[in-house]
Amino acid sequence: MTEGFSTLEGWYTLHDFRTMDWPAWKALDPREKALVQEELFSLLHRFCAIDEKREGSFGLFDVAGHKADFLFLNLRPTLEEITSLERDLNKTQFARYAKPAYSYVSVVEISNYLHGQEKKPEDMLQDPYVQSRLYPVLPKVKAICFYPMNKKRDGQDNWYTLPVEERRALMRDHGMTGRKFAGQLTQMIGGSIGLDDWEWGVTLFANDPVVFKKVVTDMRFDVVSARYAEFGAFFVGNALDNDQLIKALDGTCHSTSK
Image (cartoon, rainbow, N blue to C red; front, side, top):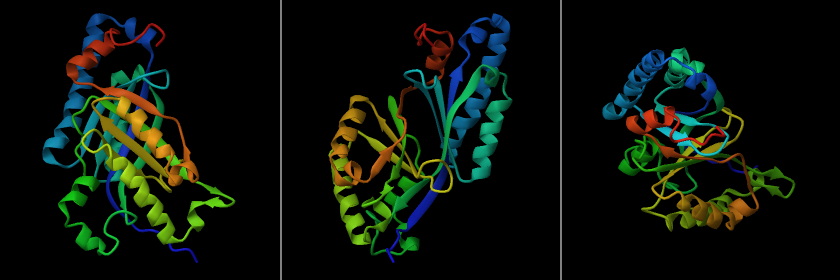
């Protein structure tokens, strides 16, 4: 029997992508639009306040391309809290104009492939680095990239039938590729086996979005990706603060095609 792998889990994550009904939004009376925005900003303030308490984290992003317009990214200790936050957003008047485009549910994960092979889980949880990985505060950087992925189960290219030491060696090489971008990139891995349609959700953060292209390109040449990985759609966007969100809602940050 092939040996499996163990994981440590942290906060639950919800990537909530929304597409704006721009004609309906632009047709709103300015006074009504102001009330809708006031309600939205009140909710976002509550989302953001959780960072200060270190009981979760939140980020808002402007998505490039036609797959979505905005990403509301929430991290919380429980799935119940994640569901409640999604419901709170759906109850706002803003949700009449910001329609669900795509969502992804996962839980922040560290596997024993790269960390703590010789340590017990309870000992790993005392490590400040492990704590920062499992319970991350989203970095204050300019850009985000998200994509889901699977490990292949296709004939001879079946990740789940490889011996654990071979999997560990391949993942170690894969990790070394990522380390070349230390200081330029932050990565968050969400385990989603049994939680969503793919097995993992990968979120990358950087100030220069070109770094996303470079790291994903380099990793394509690792055996673990070249032979054993399958990828879903990629989403890329820019971090938004309140002023930038106001400009985005005024339409100045969007092309006429949106």
